[in-house]
Each structure stands twice: as C-alpha cells, then as structure tokens.
Image (cartoon, rainbow, N blue to C red; front, side, top):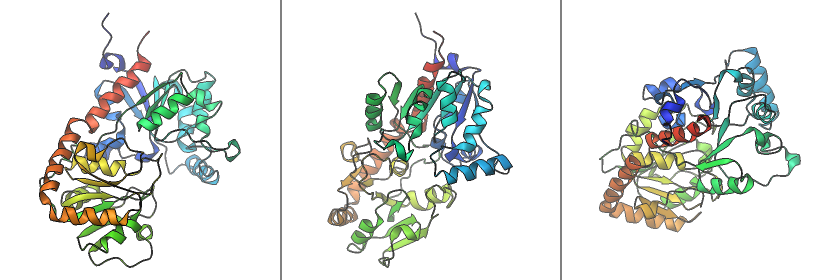
Amino acid sequence: MIEPSPTNILAGLRIAVVNPYLEGREKDCEKNLYPRSHLWGADALSKAGARVVYIRPDSSSVCYKLLSMLSRLAKGRLGNLEFDWLIVTSFWRYDLIYICYGSFLATQLLRALGVIRCPVVAWVYRPPRAIPFWKLRDLQTRFPFRYGLDGLLCLTKRAEQGWKVKWPRKRISFLAWGADTIMFAGSDSPGEFFFACGRTYRDYATLLAAAAQVPVPLKIIASRSLLGSQPLPPNVHLVQGPNNPSNDRGILYADIIGEYYAKAKAVLICLQPIEDDTSGLTNLLEALAMGRPVAITRTGSLDIDVEKEGVGRLVAPGDVKGWVDLLRHWQNDPQELAVMSSRALDLANKYYNHERHGRDVVRFLAGFLAKT
C-alpha cells in the first residue's frame, strides 16, 4: 500500500502556529528582512497546502496587558499567558497546534483532559531538568500538563535522548535546524576582520583577554554590559547591541549580513560551558550559510562538530591561550580559512538550511494528521 504524501495529508488543514519569539515578523521573512529559519518550518507547511494561522495577540488590548503583567509577576512559571488565552478560546478551529517556542499550560491541560481534540506538538531546546517541584519551574513537562503534548521536536540529539528516556511512549524526534540560505547567501570575500556577536551565555571576557594579546582586528556586536567594565583593546571595535537578550529588534539583519558576516575572516563564538544549552547555534548556522569559518567553545551541547566537518576549530572553555594561538594561526594562514569557507558554505547548502529543515517538519507533523 502506498502511503499518502505529506502534501496530500496537509492540504486544506488548519494549523495554528504558536511562536511568541517571532513577534509578528512573518511578513518581514517574506520580504527578506528577517531569517526564515525563525518560522520553524511554518512556511513549508503553507507550501504543502496547509492553512497556517499564526497565533498573535493584540498588544494594545486590555486583556493582553493584564495577562502580560500576570506573566511577569509569575516570572514565567505560568507560561505565555497572552498566547495561551488565544489558543484556548479558538482551539476548535484547528487540526493541529504547532508550538515553536514557549510553554502553554492551559492548552496542554485542556488537551490532556480531551477537551482539545487535535494534536499538540512542541519544540524543546534542551533535555529535561531535575528541578524540585516546589520551585514551580518547567510545569509544562510535569503531571498532568505533559499529557497535553502529543509529540516533541528536539533541537539537539542530547535533548532527544533525554526526553525519550523520560517519555518513552511519546513521538519524539531530533530535527537539525538550518539557516536561511536565501538571506544568508554566502560570500566569497577573503575577509577583513574577525567577528563575534550574540547575547546568551557568551564569554566575552575570555575573548577580549585573547584579543589583548593578539593585535588582530575584531568587531563585536553586543551590549557593553556583556563585555564587562574593563577597557577594550585598541584592536576591538564594539557595535552596541540591545541589552535585553529577548530583544531582537536592534541592528537590522541586512546590515549584520552585509557589513559584518560578509566581511569577516571568521566568526568567533566564545561561550560559557553550559552543557545543556543551545547558545551559539543560531550564530553558527548563519556563519555556515555565509561561508565563514567558525571558532567555537567546546560545550558538548551542539551537534555540529566544526573540526570533524572541516569548517572551523574548537576551543576549550575559558582557554585564553587557546584563543590566542588560534587567532595567531588564522591571521597567518589565509589558505586554511579559504578552504574552511568553501566547506562551510557547502555544508549549509547541502544540509543545514531552512528548506531541508522545513521538509523534515512537514513530514513529522503530517504523521499526526494522517488518517489511520
């Protein structure tokens, strides 16, 4: 018997996409102003024939302001209340609820009780954590809320392994993310400077200590507070970024691509050694799509081995000397950087791209909607 294709399964079905991080920038993605990778495959669902509905609250409404205030007072323990309210007041309109980011306790509870009849599938970015119940953290993964998730998509293999142990009967799958290779279209420039950016769990102190010993040109996009109070070495140029880690509306992506990624010798991702976090992944994927070599702290949380793939080098956590040696080596070996650049672009085009990621999302979600 021939199984129906995902397109045949999804055609005409209504899928609610829940992604607070996107902040209503779907149109920006279409206009090439914001990376399509942050749609998490929603655009691929539309191409497969699904009727995608983005859950988006009206930030000017009184209800939104009250729920947003309650969320802040609860310090996130109650999940994303502003979006949760919209789901529970419209769930009967959808054939599947696809959660890209955030926690939604009321939605999961109603699904666990059978009130919501359609499947609920969510992304998880890290393995389950052992947190005392009295702290009221990660409630979406606890009884009874966990029964309101029909399937989990995992951003790392480490997360997939952890969740499969915790929920052996759930449909759980690791899907590698990918960069927007239309927006990040690669660059054949040999590069003018080394480049670093990012806000979450960055270790700029180690990177600056290395830069102080090696007079290579280094440009950093970050808030000054993340770099500490010490004076910057004269070879370091800081471009002030937003202070709030959740604020992604600072420098325009087009400027970051054209003025920094495209002109970089290599991208430096110096991280704090947090094993279960995925910090640096967005930066890494964007660098690959631009054809830029990558130097990144070895944390054990990401699945792309830049040394094995021949696209960069790993540095031990807090290893100032390791960064010094690498910067000196790369400054004097443009040929190695050129070879890594070519491999990085090839790797992104062949696998770590949003088109392949979107196809994987379509196949996974279609499995919940296929007729038995």
